[in-house]
Length: 413
Image 1 (cartoon, helix red, strand yellow):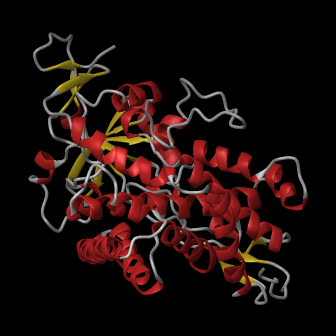
Image 2 (cartoon, rainbow, N blue to C red):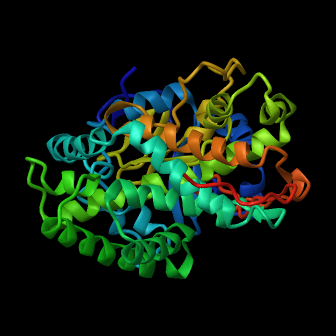
Image 3 (tube, rainbow, N blue to C red):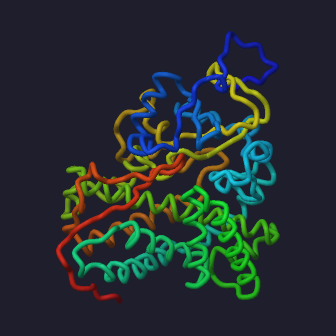
């Protein structure tokens, strides 16, 4: 059923703006998001009023079918944030993640099509066979940096350096420029007072990347964007590269860590470290269903008040899709995750992720390299002591400490 606009007659609808909002920024939400989603579903149904950060309201979509309807209806639910961002202060910590940008995520219609064509072409040029070798060549020296210690934090010592170096390789980015990009990205995703400064640092570094590829082209995504027939200008090029880093690092980092955590704590997967029946790909699919790395995102902004599921949504206020809640919606969930990839963790509709194949490959190869090298890997703390980072968007561990028998460095081919 299509949503109704303010001109349509409706029977006693409620307004999302009049309801008490649930904070998505608290440590309590980070510790038990699924419990919060269940409570929201009982209280509100498919649409829940939330605060993304203090004083910034939004509607969180927690019903699967409602989410699919919204994601496939860009006419009523465009991704244009321009009107909304006039209502939030310039130092709002989530503004860098949500503000208007000339990229495929934050635009609709012909503009979106133009940006997406360039991005899809850039990613399509990635040789997956070579990417497999690239991840292996990056992962083994990183493992060698800690394998003789008998313990490590897989976030800071493994997943981040492997993912970041892999994205840099795909974009053709060297070490010095890559370091500046990493610092800006980390500040931007953490939010808080440094988010805006981090976003500026990141943008300045990506402009340097644009100029580098204009002068010194290579066989990489950045060059393919620069040379694409759509002829993106420097600002547009910078923003497409920003999107690739944003979608490639933080979500991928969380996907790897959440999957390793599952494999180390769930008996069905723990055996696979030593040859059990369930694979890394099975674990990845289950995490994408139950604990997706970007839990709440795919934000849209209705142009006018609109009625969905008998609830009025305000104009120009964020409508955020909760992939984590929708994937676990009891109205559609069977509890069977293996060989079933109908989840929303890659989104759906015109804004669905164009990089699923390389993302799967990178995550699976990074995990397999780690577990092949350190097959007796175990959590370094009880699972219940792991800490989740607060934030409205991600499902992210603050650290993933592990222990293992001290192992001599591997031979790198």
